[in-house]
Image 1 (tube, rainbow, N blue to C red):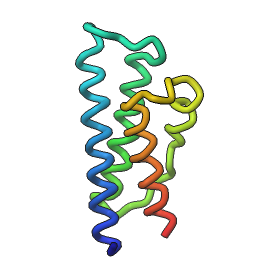
Image 2 (cartoon, rainbow, N blue to C red):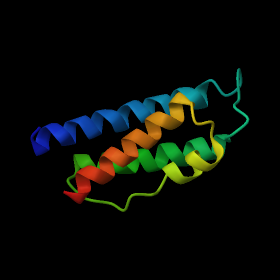
Image 3 (cartoon, helix red, strand yellow):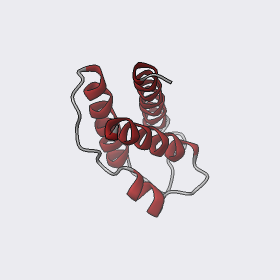
Image 4 (cartoon, helix red, strand yellow):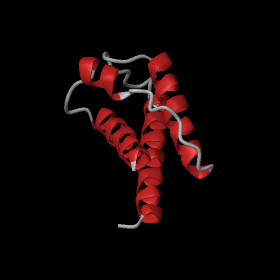
Length: 97
């Protein structure tokens, strides 16, 4: 896979994670999860957007470590958490190269 293809894959993962966080925020009133808050979701959305924007502008930013609180407090099988962690780690791997 070329660097451009890897970059596009990471951008796609970040976009999917951003969409999932947005959907979770939108559905908050109907089914709020007991392991996170609206504030945490807003923070996650902001940091994921920052990572995606850095790809768009070819600027590397520090990886915020979003996986840490997710791994510590979210259910392991939570699909939203998995998307966020996958996107962040893919960004980190891409930027290390």
